Amino acid sequence: MVGRRYIACCLVSAAAGMGVLAPAAPASAEVQQGLGSALVHDPFGASSAYRGEIRAPREFSGIAWLATEESDEVVQEVFLVCHDTRDNDAEHDLPRLSIVRTPVDPRGIIVEELDVEFPGRSVPNDLESIARLPGRNGALLVESNADGTDPDPMIYLARWDEDLNLEIVSSVPWPETPEPLVNVEATAVVTVRGWDYFVYAERAEGRDTTNINMTRLVVGADGADGAIRFGRRWTSVPFTAPVPPGARPASGMDIDTMGNVYVSSAYDPGDLGPFDSAVYRAATVRAGGGIGARLRPVEPPQQLARSSGLKVEGVGLVAGSFPIFIGDDDEDYGGLLRQLRVVGE
Image (cartoon, rainbow, N blue to C red):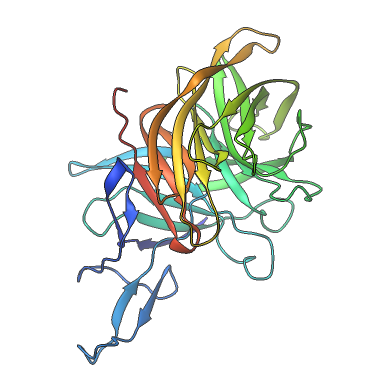
C-alpha cells in the first residue's frame, strides 16, 4: 500500500453542527501540486509570486472508523474513506480509498490517498460504502451497481494491521438480494450473539421509502483465506425519510454495538447542489427471528441531525458508539468529514 498525504485546509465549521465549505488559505498551509491542490496567479497583482489555491479533498462516499491515535496529548480519530470513482478512461487511475484524520490545528483534516491493489478486475467501479466488521481490523468495501447494469458488482474484504497498513485480501460478487440491486449507498455489519449480519439499503432515487435488508454473514478469520459468505434468507423493514423533501432515503449507514441502525438521507439535484441531508436512527437489530436476528423499524424515525447545503453519504461511529461522524460527497464542492452534534444522546 502506497499513500499520498496532503492537508485539506479550506473547510471550516458552521451552522447546524455539520459545517459548510468556505475558502481559507492560511500562510502555513501545505500546498502540494497534484495532490488535491493547484496553484493560480494572483489576479490583483499583490505579489509577483504565485499564490497557493487550496482545494477541498475529493468526495467522501463512504466512511468507517479505524482507530483513535494519541500522541503528545493530541487525540485524532482515523477513518477509512472510499471514493465513488468509476472504471472509465477519465477516472480509472484515481484512488479508490483514503485514510482521513481529524484536525490537530487550523489547517484542517489530513487526507492520505492510498494506492491499493484489488483482486479480480483492475479497479473497483463506484465504491459507495464501507461496512466495518465489529471488533476486528477489517471491513467490506461495497460496489453500488450504480445504474443496475453491472453484471457482476463486487464486495471486497479489506484488512489492516496496527500501523494501518491496508490490503485487499479477497472479493466476492454481491449475493442474490431480495429486490433488484441498484444504487446501494448504505451498508453495515452488526454482530448479534457472536454471529455477523450484513445490512444494506438502496438509495431509492425518486422515492421517499427504501427497505433495510439483512442476512447472515460469515467472513474468514484473520490468517485464513478471507472468504466471504452470505446467507440465503433475508429479513427486511421499510424506512421512510421524513426530510429532506425529495431526498434519497438511504445514502449512508452504520450500526452501533446496541444494534441501533443509523441512516443518512440526502437530496442531490446535481453537481452544484443545493444539497440537503438528515441523519436518523432508523431501525434496531435484536436477537431472534428466523435467521437469528430481527430488524425492527423506529417509528417514527428519530432525527439526529439536519444539514442544508451538504450531501451526507457516509455515517461512521467511533468504536461502535457515539460520537458519530459524517462524510460528505458534495460533488464539485468536494468532500468533508465532520462530527455530528447529537442533542440528548
